[in-house]
Length: 310
Image (cartoon, rainbow, N blue to C red; front, side, top):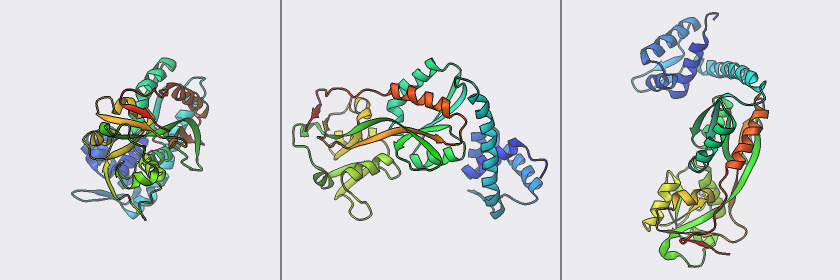
Protein backbone atom coordinates (compact mmCIF):
# COMPACT_ATOMS: atom_id res chain seq x y z
CA UNK A 1 0.00 0.00 0.00
CA UNK A 2 2.59 2.52 -1.16
CA UNK A 3 0.30 4.86 -3.07
CA UNK A 4 -2.07 5.97 -0.32
CA UNK A 5 -2.76 9.71 -0.18
CA UNK A 6 -3.55 11.86 2.81
CA UNK A 7 -6.72 12.95 1.06
CA UNK A 8 -7.91 9.35 0.78
CA UNK A 9 -7.23 8.73 4.45
CA UNK A 10 -9.25 11.81 5.48
CA UNK A 11 -12.12 10.75 3.22
CA UNK A 12 -12.00 7.25 4.70
CA UNK A 13 -12.15 8.64 8.24
CA UNK A 14 -15.10 10.90 7.35
CA UNK A 15 -17.06 8.04 5.78
CA UNK A 16 -16.30 5.72 8.69
CA UNK A 17 -17.49 8.42 11.10
CA UNK A 18 -20.69 9.43 9.28
CA UNK A 19 -21.67 6.05 7.82
CA UNK A 20 -23.23 7.85 4.87
CA UNK A 21 -21.67 8.99 1.57
CA UNK A 22 -23.62 12.24 1.26
CA UNK A 23 -22.96 13.40 4.83
CA UNK A 24 -19.29 12.43 4.58
CA UNK A 25 -18.94 14.30 1.30
CA UNK A 26 -20.57 17.40 2.80
CA UNK A 27 -18.21 17.22 5.79
CA UNK A 28 -15.23 17.03 3.42
CA UNK A 29 -16.54 19.80 1.16
CA UNK A 30 -16.55 17.66 -2.00
CA UNK A 31 -19.15 16.00 -4.21
CA UNK A 32 -20.46 12.55 -3.40
CA UNK A 33 -19.14 11.02 -6.69
CA UNK A 34 -15.66 12.41 -5.95
CA UNK A 35 -15.72 10.87 -2.49
CA UNK A 36 -16.92 7.53 -3.87
CA UNK A 37 -14.13 7.50 -6.44
CA UNK A 38 -11.45 8.19 -3.83
CA UNK A 39 -12.80 5.46 -1.52
CA UNK A 40 -12.87 3.00 -4.43
CA UNK A 41 -9.24 3.82 -5.27
CA UNK A 42 -8.30 3.34 -1.62
CA UNK A 43 -9.99 -0.08 -1.59
CA UNK A 44 -8.19 -1.04 -4.78
CA UNK A 45 -4.89 -0.07 -3.19
CA UNK A 46 -5.78 -2.08 -0.06
CA UNK A 47 -6.81 -5.06 -2.19
CA UNK A 48 -10.09 -5.53 -0.31
CA UNK A 49 -13.31 -3.75 0.49
CA UNK A 50 -13.29 -1.40 3.47
CA UNK A 51 -17.04 -0.68 3.56
CA UNK A 52 -20.26 -2.64 3.22
CA UNK A 53 -22.69 -0.58 1.17
CA UNK A 54 -26.47 -0.68 1.37
CA UNK A 55 -29.22 1.67 0.20
CA UNK A 56 -29.47 3.39 3.59
CA UNK A 57 -26.20 2.81 5.38
CA UNK A 58 -22.48 2.33 4.93
CA UNK A 59 -20.61 0.30 7.51
CA UNK A 60 -17.04 -0.88 7.91
CA UNK A 61 -16.07 -4.40 6.92
CA UNK A 62 -14.07 -6.47 9.41
CA UNK A 63 -10.89 -5.33 7.65
CA UNK A 64 -12.18 -1.75 7.68
CA UNK A 65 -12.71 -2.03 11.45
CA UNK A 66 -9.06 -2.99 11.90
CA UNK A 67 -7.95 -0.35 9.39
CA UNK A 68 -9.85 2.57 11.00
CA UNK A 69 -7.94 3.10 14.29
CA UNK A 70 -4.61 3.01 12.48
CA UNK A 71 -5.82 5.64 10.03
CA UNK A 72 -7.03 7.83 12.91
CA UNK A 73 -3.61 7.51 14.56
CA UNK A 74 -1.91 8.58 11.31
CA UNK A 75 -4.22 11.58 10.87
CA UNK A 76 -3.80 12.60 14.49
CA UNK A 77 -0.02 12.47 14.16
CA UNK A 78 -0.14 14.58 10.99
CA UNK A 79 -2.35 17.16 12.70
CA UNK A 80 0.03 17.27 15.65
CA UNK A 81 2.87 18.14 13.28
CA UNK A 82 0.94 21.29 12.44
CA UNK A 83 0.30 21.87 16.14
CA UNK A 84 4.02 21.51 16.80
CA UNK A 85 4.75 24.27 14.31
CA UNK A 86 2.12 26.51 15.89
CA UNK A 87 3.48 25.72 19.35
CA UNK A 88 6.85 27.18 18.34
CA UNK A 89 5.27 30.63 18.32
CA UNK A 90 4.64 32.62 21.47
CA UNK A 91 1.03 33.31 20.52
CA UNK A 92 -1.51 30.89 19.15
CA UNK A 93 -2.42 31.59 15.53
CA UNK A 94 -4.27 29.68 12.82
CA UNK A 95 -7.05 27.21 13.40
CA UNK A 96 -8.33 26.54 16.92
CA UNK A 97 -11.03 23.87 17.27
CA UNK A 98 -13.01 24.31 20.49
CA UNK A 99 -15.77 22.01 21.69
CA UNK A 100 -18.38 23.32 24.16
CA UNK A 101 -21.25 21.58 25.95
CA UNK A 102 -24.75 22.92 25.15
CA UNK A 103 -25.43 24.16 28.70
CA UNK A 104 -22.42 26.49 28.45
CA UNK A 105 -22.10 27.46 24.78
CA UNK A 106 -24.95 30.03 24.39
CA UNK A 107 -23.99 31.90 27.55
CA UNK A 108 -20.20 31.91 27.35
CA UNK A 109 -19.40 32.04 23.63
CA UNK A 110 -20.61 35.59 22.81
CA UNK A 111 -18.14 37.19 25.21
CA UNK A 112 -15.44 34.54 24.75
CA UNK A 113 -15.26 34.74 20.96
CA UNK A 114 -15.01 38.52 21.09
CA UNK A 115 -12.22 38.35 23.67
CA UNK A 116 -10.28 35.72 21.72
CA UNK A 117 -10.54 37.74 18.51
CA UNK A 118 -9.26 40.88 20.21
CA UNK A 119 -6.42 39.25 22.13
CA UNK A 120 -5.28 36.70 19.54
CA UNK A 121 -5.26 38.24 16.08
CA UNK A 122 -4.99 35.68 13.32
CA UNK A 123 -6.83 33.01 15.30
CA UNK A 124 -9.31 31.05 13.17
CA UNK A 125 -11.83 29.70 15.68
CA UNK A 126 -13.99 26.67 14.90
CA UNK A 127 -16.67 25.88 17.50
CA UNK A 128 -18.30 22.48 18.00
CA UNK A 129 -21.31 22.31 20.33
CA UNK A 130 -22.37 18.85 21.48
CA UNK A 131 -22.60 16.63 24.55
CA UNK A 132 -19.59 15.64 26.64
CA UNK A 133 -19.11 12.02 25.48
CA UNK A 134 -18.91 13.10 21.84
CA UNK A 135 -16.55 15.98 22.64
CA UNK A 136 -14.21 13.63 24.49
CA UNK A 137 -14.25 11.19 21.60
CA UNK A 138 -13.45 13.95 19.12
CA UNK A 139 -10.62 15.13 21.35
CA UNK A 140 -9.22 11.61 21.40
CA UNK A 141 -9.56 11.35 17.61
CA UNK A 142 -7.72 14.66 17.12
CA UNK A 143 -10.73 16.44 15.64
CA UNK A 144 -10.75 19.02 18.47
CA UNK A 145 -7.91 20.92 20.12
CA UNK A 146 -9.72 21.53 23.39
CA UNK A 147 -13.18 21.34 24.97
CA UNK A 148 -15.07 23.26 27.64
CA UNK A 149 -17.00 20.78 29.78
CA UNK A 150 -18.14 20.07 33.32
CA UNK A 151 -15.39 18.58 35.47
CA UNK A 152 -14.19 16.08 36.37
CA UNK A 153 -14.04 13.95 33.23
CA UNK A 154 -11.46 11.60 34.78
CA UNK A 155 -9.78 10.66 31.50
CA UNK A 156 -6.11 9.75 32.11
CA UNK A 157 -5.09 10.97 28.65
CA UNK A 158 -6.49 14.49 29.21
CA UNK A 159 -5.33 17.58 31.08
CA UNK A 160 -8.14 19.21 33.13
CA UNK A 161 -7.99 22.92 33.99
CA UNK A 162 -10.80 24.26 36.24
CA UNK A 163 -12.15 27.63 35.06
CA UNK A 164 -15.02 28.56 37.36
CA UNK A 165 -17.71 27.15 39.63
CA UNK A 166 -21.35 28.17 39.32
CA UNK A 167 -24.48 27.40 41.31
CA UNK A 168 -27.74 25.87 40.11
CA UNK A 169 -30.99 27.75 40.65
CA UNK A 170 -34.59 26.59 40.90
CA UNK A 171 -36.98 27.89 38.24
CA UNK A 172 -40.68 27.68 39.06
CA UNK A 173 -43.87 29.48 37.98
CA UNK A 174 -44.02 33.12 39.04
CA UNK A 175 -47.13 32.35 41.08
CA UNK A 176 -44.92 30.22 43.35
CA UNK A 177 -42.56 33.10 44.17
CA UNK A 178 -42.26 33.45 47.92
CA UNK A 179 -43.23 29.86 48.70
CA UNK A 180 -40.78 27.87 50.82
CA UNK A 181 -37.96 26.44 48.80
CA UNK A 182 -38.35 22.68 48.35
CA UNK A 183 -35.58 20.46 49.64
CA UNK A 184 -34.20 17.66 47.44
CA UNK A 185 -36.68 15.12 48.80
CA UNK A 186 -39.59 17.45 47.99
CA UNK A 187 -38.23 18.13 44.51
CA UNK A 188 -38.34 14.41 43.81
CA UNK A 189 -42.08 14.46 44.45
CA UNK A 190 -42.74 17.39 42.11
CA UNK A 191 -43.03 17.39 38.32
CA UNK A 192 -39.36 17.85 37.63
CA UNK A 193 -38.36 18.98 34.14
CA UNK A 194 -35.00 17.61 32.99
CA UNK A 195 -32.70 17.75 30.01
CA UNK A 196 -32.83 14.59 27.94
CA UNK A 197 -30.42 11.76 28.58
CA UNK A 198 -26.83 12.41 27.55
CA UNK A 199 -26.55 15.90 29.05
CA UNK A 200 -24.20 16.01 32.04
CA UNK A 201 -26.32 18.78 33.61
CA UNK A 202 -29.24 16.33 33.79
CA UNK A 203 -27.08 13.94 35.82
CA UNK A 204 -25.94 16.76 38.11
CA UNK A 205 -29.53 17.87 38.75
CA UNK A 206 -30.59 14.32 39.53
CA UNK A 207 -27.62 13.91 41.83
CA UNK A 208 -28.70 16.99 43.82
CA UNK A 209 -32.16 15.48 44.16
CA UNK A 210 -30.59 12.19 45.30
CA UNK A 211 -32.24 10.38 42.39
CA UNK A 212 -30.95 7.16 40.86
CA UNK A 213 -32.92 6.88 37.61
CA UNK A 214 -32.26 3.15 37.44
CA UNK A 215 -33.60 2.49 40.91
CA UNK A 216 -35.95 5.32 41.88
CA UNK A 217 -36.98 7.79 39.17
CA UNK A 218 -38.88 10.93 40.21
CA UNK A 219 -42.60 10.54 40.60
CA UNK A 220 -43.36 12.57 37.52
CA UNK A 221 -40.84 14.15 35.17
CA UNK A 222 -40.59 15.40 31.60
CA UNK A 223 -37.58 15.88 29.33
CA UNK A 224 -36.44 18.56 26.88
CA UNK A 225 -33.44 19.06 24.62
CA UNK A 226 -32.45 22.55 25.83
CA UNK A 227 -32.54 24.81 28.89
CA UNK A 228 -34.63 27.28 26.89
CA UNK A 229 -37.37 24.69 26.40
CA UNK A 230 -37.26 23.74 30.08
CA UNK A 231 -37.82 27.36 31.16
CA UNK A 232 -40.68 27.82 28.68
CA UNK A 233 -42.30 24.66 30.03
CA UNK A 234 -42.09 26.14 33.53
CA UNK A 235 -43.65 29.36 32.19
CA UNK A 236 -46.52 27.24 30.86
CA UNK A 237 -47.11 25.81 34.34
CA UNK A 238 -45.96 22.30 33.48
CA UNK A 239 -43.47 21.88 36.31
CA UNK A 240 -40.21 23.13 37.85
CA UNK A 241 -36.60 22.82 36.78
CA UNK A 242 -32.99 23.58 37.66
CA UNK A 243 -30.71 25.64 35.44
CA UNK A 244 -27.10 26.86 35.86
CA UNK A 245 -26.51 30.39 37.08
CA UNK A 246 -24.98 31.55 33.79
CA UNK A 247 -28.20 30.73 31.92
CA UNK A 248 -30.51 32.86 34.09
CA UNK A 249 -30.16 36.20 32.29
CA UNK A 250 -30.73 34.71 28.83
CA UNK A 251 -33.37 32.09 29.52
CA UNK A 252 -35.66 33.94 31.96
CA UNK A 253 -35.78 37.41 30.38
CA UNK A 254 -39.04 36.73 28.54
CA UNK A 255 -40.54 34.06 30.80
CA UNK A 256 -43.01 34.54 33.67
CA UNK A 257 -41.00 32.48 36.14
CA UNK A 258 -39.48 32.87 39.57
CA UNK A 259 -35.78 32.12 40.09
CA UNK A 260 -34.87 30.86 43.53
CA UNK A 261 -31.34 30.44 44.82
CA UNK A 262 -30.86 27.55 47.18
CA UNK A 263 -29.39 27.99 50.64
CA UNK A 264 -26.07 26.46 51.60
CA UNK A 265 -24.81 24.05 50.57
CA UNK A 266 -25.83 25.13 47.08
CA UNK A 267 -25.84 22.66 44.21
CA UNK A 268 -23.11 23.62 41.76
CA UNK A 269 -20.81 22.47 39.01
CA UNK A 270 -17.23 23.21 37.99
CA UNK A 271 -16.61 24.13 34.36
CA UNK A 272 -13.17 23.61 32.90
CA UNK A 273 -11.06 23.09 29.79
CA UNK A 274 -9.63 19.76 28.76
CA UNK A 275 -7.13 18.76 26.08
CA UNK A 276 -4.81 15.87 25.25
CA UNK A 277 -1.70 15.53 27.40
CA UNK A 278 0.24 14.88 24.19
CA UNK A 279 -0.86 18.15 22.57
CA UNK A 280 2.06 20.42 21.63
CA UNK A 281 -0.29 23.37 22.21
CA UNK A 282 -0.45 23.04 26.00
CA UNK A 283 1.32 26.37 26.64
CA UNK A 284 -0.99 28.22 24.22
CA UNK A 285 -4.11 26.47 25.54
CA UNK A 286 -3.20 27.59 29.05
CA UNK A 287 -3.27 31.15 27.68
CA UNK A 288 -6.66 30.48 26.13
CA UNK A 289 -7.96 29.14 29.46
CA UNK A 290 -7.09 32.50 31.07
CA UNK A 291 -9.16 34.27 28.40
CA UNK A 292 -12.08 31.90 29.02
CA UNK A 293 -11.89 32.50 32.75
CA UNK A 294 -11.98 36.29 32.30
CA UNK A 295 -14.91 35.98 29.87
CA UNK A 296 -17.14 34.34 32.46
CA UNK A 297 -20.23 36.39 33.29
CA UNK A 298 -20.36 37.45 36.94
CA UNK A 299 -23.63 36.33 38.61
CA UNK A 300 -26.14 39.16 38.93
CA UNK A 301 -28.11 40.36 41.89
CA UNK A 302 -31.68 39.04 42.00
CA UNK A 303 -34.11 40.93 39.76
CA UNK A 304 -37.87 41.48 40.21
CA UNK A 305 -38.73 37.86 39.41
CA UNK A 306 -35.91 36.41 41.49
CA UNK A 307 -35.50 35.41 45.09
CA UNK A 308 -32.50 34.59 47.26
CA UNK A 309 -33.68 32.17 49.89
CA UNK A 310 -31.61 30.58 52.59
